[in-house]
Image (cartoon, rainbow, N blue to C red; front, side):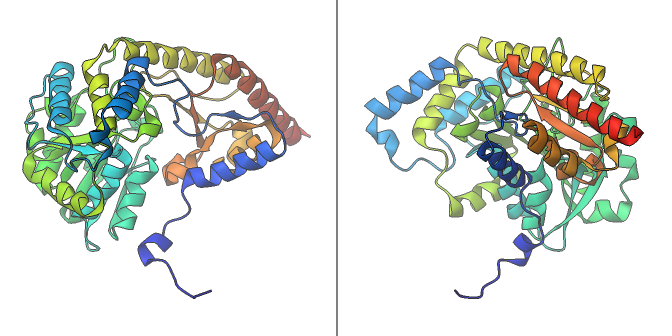
Length: 402
């Protein structure tokens, strides 16, 4: 076997969080444990029927869609996106120059970092964060400057705490609200105005990862960054079909913004991929132009699950609270488990009970002391999960009392 090392950029990042979780999960299955998987944000509900029907009909009857697609995205697909953005947010975009199709927003964010960042640059990344936000920066060779998301600040970054020297070196700021993993939403829109002002002052590209804009509860409305004055000069916004339409495995999304800011990613992707398959884009059009009732129905399911889990966790001594969006619960470890650390707790929980959760430490240093639970299993299973977590917690508490 030849002796060859991977790139330094790849070597300096640890194995992907969910790769480790999946390994532990497989071991649990091998032991015939009854696994309840609350780890990945992997929707358990099916893609709406009208979207599936459009895909099947297209693949079966339109063989020209089996050929290489347009890397930038079909004009019809990009037009459907701009019409949806106008209906949803009141945002006007040029479908020819201000929209780019993606093979999922995760891919797009990673490639955006690679298309903009040099080794001498840094990016401002929330901590905790969706792992691709900091991993993509590391893979590009740039440095990550962590913006702590602390409970006392409602899990929002404090721009005033960013040193001027760091701000001058920063090239990208990554924001994600409604937030993964903390499930936080922005209720004071002055936050977005401050972010735009800060990025304009220091010539920083503001990246809004808006994958959860449609998974909101009650009367909460998640805005687009482009609803705020000046955003077009500094921002790009990413959207995904994965969570909005239960199309996680389809790998389809988009990014939008000013042509000048979008072009480096478009150029970068032109060397690497051919874009999303044409039949996927046509199904995406059906999703965007079809009835949107399925989105509200989906949100109501997640809201019901969230309330059940939050109420149950509080009863067994876990500190958490109801959220206004996403498909996650961000829960603080009870005192009896805190010293052990979130990764160890998550590993033991699956090995001893079959319940799979995500350790907060996997989302960044400031995620330690917390865990994330995804609301992605049948409603009846949450009762079982709570019973097992409660028994696990009580057992640990009794051990420490002895």
